[in-house]
Amino acid sequence: MQSCDFSIFGLNPHPQPFNIDLGHSGTTCPGTHPRPYLQTNKSSASSDITSIQLTPLSLPPPPIAQFRSGDILGHRRFMAQGSVTGAGKRLIQIDISSDTICPWCFVGKKHLDRAIAASEDQFEFQIKWHPFLLNPSAPKEGVNKREHYKQKFGDRREQIISRMTEVFKGLGLQYNMDGKIGNTLDSHRLIYLAGQQGLNKQHDLVEELFLGYFIQGKYIGDWEFLVESAKKVGVEGAAEFLHDPNNGLKEVNEDLEKYSAAITGVPHYLINGKQKLSGAQPPEVFLQAFQLAGNSP
Image (cartoon, one colour):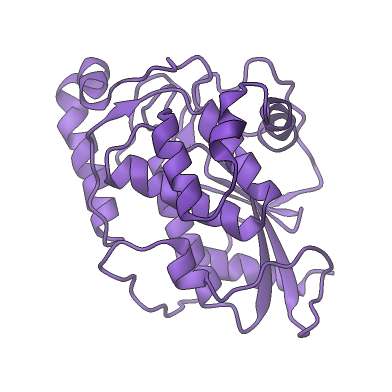
């Protein structure tokens, strides 16, 4: 399982603060206390397909240069409703719980994008991003990322950075530890705004935020960076929206309760409201999940 397991910023499949699992199991970002004010209600109607047996599949390698989701998926059309599209394709709805400082969420998005690009002849996709707060009490002003890792991980800091650098290199990206780390609430409010203007814009905004934070050393709580990212993908009114701290707050909290109260780590995927996937799964797992979802009534 590949997902973020860190309280404020560490990785570990077991929710203990400031530990990292450097193996394949440490590929989710779990928060120690991600949503202390939310009630957990686990659904028994969903099925977990993370242990499915896979048939070897062939996918083209990812590009070596940095890329945005729109560059790969710009010709893809998000469908609003219905299980079968006008073109006779099955609709795959994917609800993603994610935090914008979770590196495995970015890795998972890249893998998901590749799987979608390889499946467009069979399916139409509707993708919605939902918030997960790894540490809701993280300082709004942020702290130096490198210093934070040094204080929390000590001698293991370089091993952790080396691990993520290797993973990102495999995606054609250069992992950047510059900048600050801190509160992500404003980024989730902005992602909500983007979703109100179109799911393609929301998907592209998430890509821009990940690229800025993990590749360019931008601070996820910097309004200038957030507004700039919104403009790049055509989201309007970002500055005015962020200026009022209450804008989007109710909706973000409702989304947290609906989609994230019953999970302990991200990324987390809910496919067609039934199947669940946790972690930055490889593209082959997503392809298998699409087939299962497409064949389900």
